[in-house]
Amino acid sequence: MGKGAGRRRANTATGRVCPCGSGQTYADCCAPAHSGDRPASTAEELMRSRFSAFALGDTGYLLRSWHSSTRPTSLELDPGQRWTRLEIVETERGGLLDNAGTVTFHAHYRDAGRPGTMTEHSRFVRADGRWVYVDGDQP
Image (cartoon, rainbow, N blue to C red; front, side, top):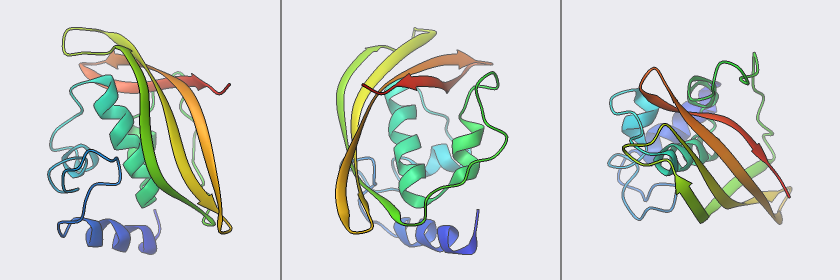
């Protein structure tokens, strides 16, 4: 991760609202997952923390939270794309007592100043006791 992404992350930790849209501060929401202090307890929490990682440019966390069977060897984020808002459409399973779950969401972004939306139905599983992203389908 480049220096710019680290600065954005540090600035967000000062009490600003978390990029995932939970309404909590970043420090109380996704920061503990990103730092490894508190792993996501549900598939939806992992989805939210991954959206925040995209918004903050935290490729290290994105790779760490990706299942080893589908994880790319590296990840390059588009510097012209800015993730702005997450809408959770539906969550199936993925709770505290589940080992698998899905989350359907709309992720809003701006690319070269133009708004866009990506929709995905994402699959998550528990691996070694932690939720990880497996893959997703985009309609």
